[in-house]
Image (cartoon, rainbow, N blue to C red; front, side, top):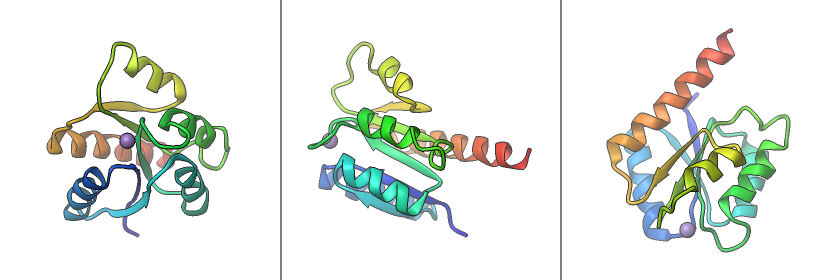
Length: 129
Ligand code: MN
C-alpha cells in the first residue's frame, strides 16, 4: 500500500510544490487547506505522516496538531511542522504541541524528503517491535 502523506497548507503555491515533490517520490498526497479540515482528514484517512503548516486561516497548525495528538487512534502519526517567518522559540513550540520535527520555509527539497523518510522509518521500526 502506498505511503500516504497529509499536507495541511493554505498557500496554493506551496501546496503545489509539496504535492509535486511528494508525488515524484512515490507518495500519495492528501490535502487540506485549513486546520479543521486537516484534523477531519486525519481522522477519516489516518495518513502515515502529516506535514503541518503552522500559519493557517482558521486554527493554527499547532492547535491542529494538539487536536490530532489527543486522539488515541491518531496519536502515533508523525507530524512535521512547516513554518515561514521562523522566530526564536518556534521549534520548541512545535515540539511542545506534539510535532516530531520542524522545518522552516523556504525548505530544501532533499532536506524535506530526508526528514519525511526518517520519521516513516521510525514508525515502521516501532510497528515491527
Ligand atoms: Mn500558511
